[in-house]
Image 1 (cartoon, rainbow, N blue to C red):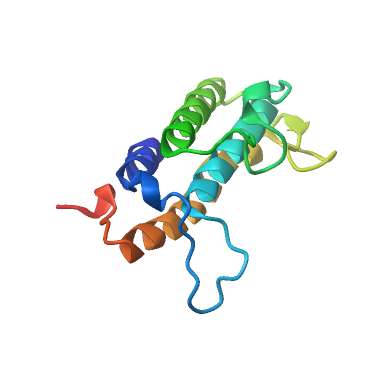
Image 2 (image 1 turned 90 degrees about the vertical axis):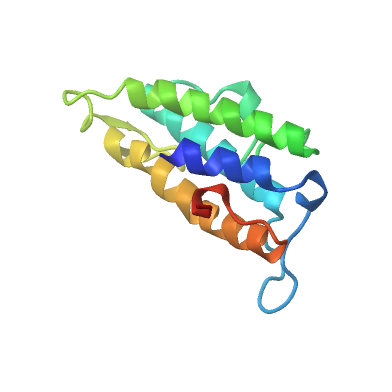
Length: 148
């Protein structure tokens, strides 16, 4: 479900709007639309690596915003699709036997149940999807998931 709402929204935003961020109201310092896409992808890579017990893949970039090489819409969409594919790998590794096994958190040295890292992919991505949907609507784009 996430993939079928998030990726089409990233694809629907025009390339020239990827640098858009709201400026009216309390929006100082918020991520641009593109940066939202990069952030979602980076966190997907990080938590999926935790679920799998792997080192974060190099293509994830450093930190929570993705690689510095993300510049264009095509770059961001390709990156997001790669993160989604890696997340599929992680989610497909889950079993009833390993959900509660302790794994290293993607956000520190603590150990947490594997299922807690797996759930981040969904709730975190939808949190930022909501922001992206607002950005899209502010630019006259109806999110594909909201179209009839």
